[in-house]
Amino acid sequence: MTDARQRALDGFRHAFGRAPGAAAFAPGRVNLIGDHTDYAGGLAMPMALGAGCVAAVGRADAGVRAVAVDMGESFETQTRSDPAAWPGWARYAIGSASLALDAAGASGVGLTIAVASDVPMGGGLSSSAALEVAVVSAVGMLAGVPIDPMDIARMAQRAEHEFAGVPCGLLDQMASVFARAEHAMIIDFADFSVRHIPIPDAASFLIVDTGVRHDNASGAYAALRERAARARAALGVEHLGRADGGSFGALPADGRAVAEHVVSECARVRAFAAAVTGGQLELAGAILDDGHASLVHRLGTSPPEVEAVVGRVRRAPGVLGCRLTGAGFGGSVVALTQDPGRAAAVLEGLGVRRADPGGGCRAVPFTS
Ligand code: GLA
Image 1: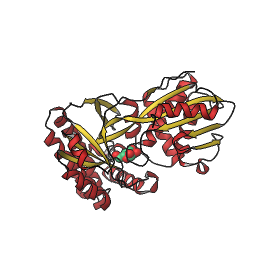
Image 2: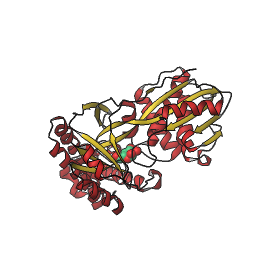
Image 3: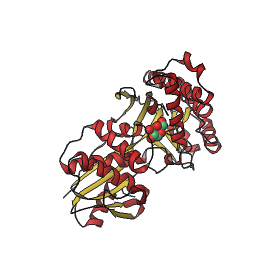
Image 4: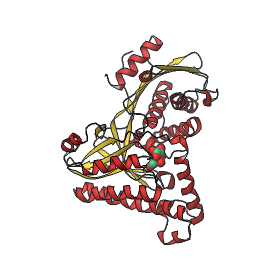
C-alpha cells in the first residue's frame, strides 16, 4: 500500500479533479508513561510515531465536501449543520476544519478535504488527534494564516470535545504538534510546558495491538475524568498531579485510588525519563510494569483480554517491561526492549510494530 501522503493526495485529485491548495501531516503517538494524568494537571511522556494522518485541503464555493480515502467514504455538509448527524470520522475532520476556518477569520469559505492515515483506528495510538491536527494545520496553511502550535493543539482538542463528544485532555494533540524526531517528550499539564527527551539507540519500544477496540466516547473515559475532578475538588487543589499524598486519607476509596494513581504516575514519569536517558533500561522496564499495575488496580482500565496480551508480551524474550498505553480499555501495549527483533518474532500474529520516534506536524509537499 502507498503511504498516507500519497493516498491523501491521489484521493484528493480523484474526488475533486484538481490538486489541493495545502496539505499537512500529523503523527500518531505512543504514550510511554503518564496516562490519565493530562486532565489532572500531571505529567506524561509521549513519543510521536513515524505513522500519521495526512489531510489535503482546497477551497470550494460553499459548504464542506470531505473524503475518507481509506474508508472509501465521502460526506458533504454545511459546517454549521448538526454534527450528531455526521459520520464519526467526519465529526473529527469537519469539526477541526470549521474551528480552523473560524480562527482564520474565514468562516464563510467552502472547503474540500481528503484524509488518509497510517494510524490504526481505536488502537490507542491517537488516530483521532492525528486527524484533527493534520486538518487544523492544513486549513491554517490554506487560509495563509499561521496558527500558533499551542492553538493548533487546543483547536484539535475542541473539535474532539464539541464535535465528537469525547472529553479528552491535551496529551494526544500536544504530542502530535510538538514532537521531535528521535525524541520523546515530557509534558507538564500544570503549565503545558514541553521538554524533549532524547531516546538512546539501545532502547527500543514495541507497540503490540491487543486487538481489543476501545472508544473514548463510550463513557468509561469520561467517568474516570469525573472521578479525578471530584477528588481535586474534595482536596481543594488546582492540579491533582501536585497534590500532597498525605491528604488522600480523607477521600472516598474511588477518589483516593485516582489521586494515588496520578501522583505516583507523575513520579514514575520522572523516574522513567531519568532511567532511560541514563541507560538503566532494566530499571526503566520495571517502572513501566509498576505503571501498568497502577492502571489495573487503581483505575481498572485493563480488561482480562488485555491482561492476557500483557502477560504474553512480558514473557517474550528481551522484554524489560510493558504497560497499556493511552486511555486503555483496549488499544495497545508498549514494551521496552533492547532486542526488538527477538521479542517481535515470538509475538507474531499480535500486530507488533516498532515505535520509531518521528517528528511533529508539518506541511506536506505536493505538486499543483
Ligand atoms: C486518551 C485521551 C488523552 C489522555 C489519555 C490517557 O488518549 O485522549 O487526553 O487522557 O487517553 O492518558
